[in-house]
Length: 455
Image 1 (cartoon, rainbow, N blue to C red):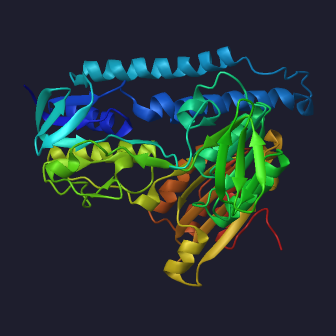
Image 2 (image 1 turned 45 degrees about the vertical axis):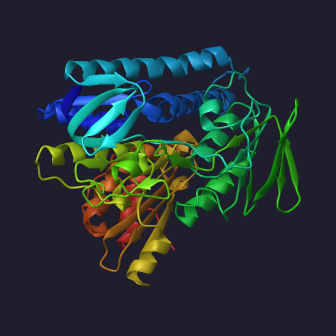
Image 3 (image 1 turned 90 degrees about the vertical axis):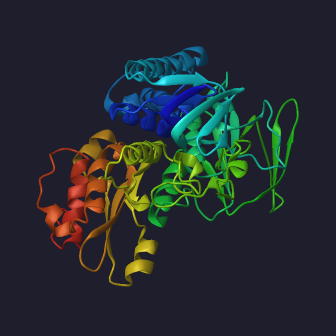
């Protein structure tokens, strides 16, 4: 029997963050995962997807180089080299993570773990005991029961390993995963159609950001059918066909099912061990403790934003709690949200609608178009920054769309989480020429002292 202070089931961002911080705090740790440490994020999610999106950006740069006086041509995609680049990034990061885990003396057990009691986990017949147990088993692509995956009907896991660039693609789902794949495939030359059941793309973002994205996607020849439901999917040797509730029929080389991710909590022995589950998600208190006091849950198996950096934060939080430290979670609304399509989307805090519901009609907004930003003109980047402030003038929402806005979210989350008043933030200097200036301009405008806005 193996024993440790902390036993962690799942080696993704939440699990390995909990393991690393626990070891740093002097706890003995066993980290269990049926695959390689790093989880979906490193191997089948965040990192490989963003590597492909960067390659897509390079393809766009080659295609548009003449606009900048550079002679270049786009001659297509070498999928072997494309995957070689992507896999190389993943491999280097995995090697670094594995080395750090080993250096900290964390015991890694490869196998499928199952909770068998408040302090015990079974891994392929071997029992591991821990004073505290952390559940961090993550999520998997959600596929409607009526749809069967195949060589033409793909989940995001399969799409990441596709050995060809499809000429045409239908994407079922216009959320983060759907619009990221739509963006990268369109850059590689695929004709893309997105089918989204809700009235707009990226429906969790501010409505103004959705409108910008749909407009900019149209410029890129990406078709979006919103408010559209699928009634039938059939595959043949040469195509996949999708029938919509309206009666319209679509046909393409591949269909990507991107309707979200489901928590991986089945067959973990949770009910038998007394751990409460609701709709597949583990029920926790505000300290991320489950209905069994020695068992915690973090990451995608806890209802809320399914983001790697949320899982990181929760893993660190739980490790520090177990070690007896006084720690605090960042509120769910204060966690930065980024979608890495082209153009990028980044946001934090409340949408305008949510702010008006909470604070009433005293809410003010301002939208600064990146057309007025010098750096954006150089980059030929379209987009906007929208600020939402409450009646007291405090920044309660920042919503951005445009090239590179993911790099502006750090300042934005500080404004929101620290409850900064827009007028106070507006007095600070934003370097010129940067896109960051656009955030500064928006802060000045919503404070009643715009420099480059009029009317």
